[in-house]
Image 1 (cartoon, rainbow, N blue to C red):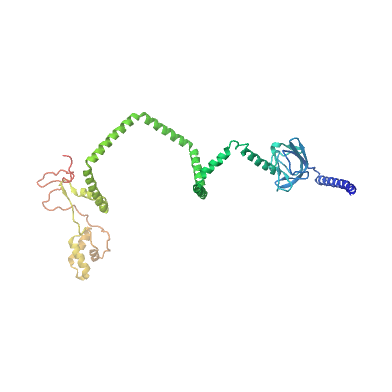
Image 2 (image 1 turned 120 degrees about the vertical axis):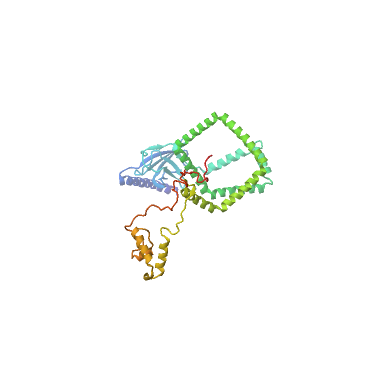
Length: 415
């Protein structure tokens, strides 16, 4: 059996090599551009073999050609599609998809512009990374255990003392430890629930600092002014100290005065309270007085006659009409036109001829429209004074009356 197997193995290997060569030739001839080659150096290349995938962003763009150990490093030769550009500072990472599957080499980052990796370039150890193996994890755990063991940190019993001290401190404090952890959990939950407010406060603080930065000149000016004020206060510190001492003395005097006159001040405040209460209750009346008083004083000033020292008033209840006009007007309203006395008609004609005011009833006797303006007639003459009446500028007996600005003594000046 071994003989026939060896005889078949050699032709099979030759046929496989020919197929690979033909396939490579087909790839080259298909687009006329040979694939690019890149060499990456790794500290180790576990699970990477010739034929392993070379990927960019998880997409296969080439394959591993050779894996060659050289000293304390591993040289991995790869080739990839010439249509795929790779950054000149690209990194090479060995990625394990799972624990048992073959690994592949990832070229990262993806090309986004700039210089591209040239054909035949090398990626040094500084830009390559290999995954941690399970043996490394076991070794790290073993080293950690040895470090804490009898030949390490616990050589003098330090670790044992630490555990014993921790047990002694925690013994009997389980509930307190539980409450502490529960309070910490609640605090973290509160912070988590109020994270929007917390972030909002931070954002508002950022806006505040930004506003201060934008108002840098104003802030500097304010600081300068504050410095000037402080300097001025420092220069006047003696005067300020004297003023404060005097104020303290005055406050002592006021305090003593209040203590000595406590009863009187209390009664005055009580009376003032009553007065203010009355003013509040009579608020509208006070407002009315303040509104009417200026007009009343003005009218009083206009009504006062300084020559005679009297208040001159005129009761004009009937307006511009005389009593005869009112009597005739009443009869015109109550009687037919034929029964109105002839004297009323004569009165109406006289008033109309002289252009004097007439009631609508008298105008009706003359067939005039109501309220029409008077036309013609003589203008009213000067006021008629009663016989023997004194001249307004003279008092009885002929003596001249002087002006009295004191409003009859009401506004008496300084004597």
